[in-house]
Length: 81
Image (cartoon, rainbow, N blue to C red; front, side, top):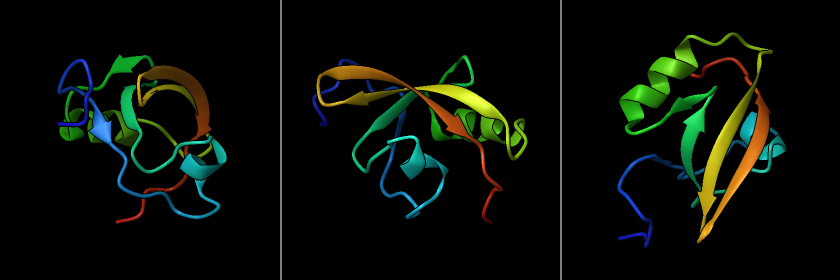
């Protein structure tokens, strides 16, 4: 549906203004395919990996934006529940 090579990853629907994702350059419509050296296939996998990180940890992520793959580094913030 999104024109991606596979249905794996997590679609970013929004980012918190001034939050960690926005600071790392992540935008709505991006698809996160790797987080902290772990391939992301589902939302559950992404959240599990995210929960194992601590606020302040710097992790590498990989995103798909259109037909490009981009690597970013993000500083993990506190989880909002």
